[in-house]
Image 1 (cartoon, rainbow, N blue to C red):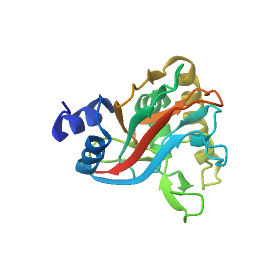
Image 2 (image 1 turned 60 degrees about the horizontal axis):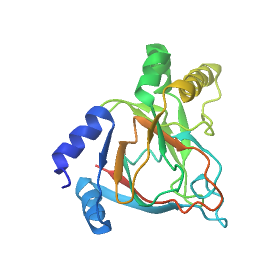
Image 3 (image 1 turned 90 degrees about the vertical axis):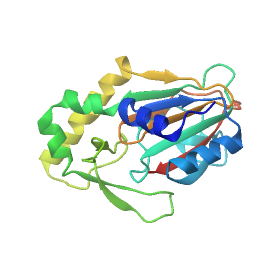
Length: 210
């Protein structure tokens, strides 16, 4: 049985994530639609004709997705035969470890993001406050718009702390077929290990704006 919406939202907002399942595709779609505006549906699978990290067998670096997405939901349609785990790092813990000065500086540091490669870019702060806690926007490949040394140092401090946590603070969630994982996109960074080039792993992902 799928928990009610209030229980799911409470879990995601208090702990940063919620694991559910197994569910049918129809149940999953109804669920994500009930949690807010579900958008950017994506089949996360290997595709040799696509250059995106999502579609390549190489490791996916830790990152958050588009800042307009409050939550990210994945349903496992088919799992990798050896692993295929989602890897997670608590970005709030990384921010806290960096100290208040770095956190406050990052509220004034911005980067650009696109929904798709050919879509217009929008500008977002690396850290922004919200009623449910800080919202973190991070990927190690983004570059701050601000060119001043103070901005660069604050972002580099966060990047270094996240790099340290990739060695010791990674949570792994390996979904079975039909299971669902929902995370707070402003808190948890996600990535994965490399896959075999013939991996049949396929997840159905939605971004959700509550």
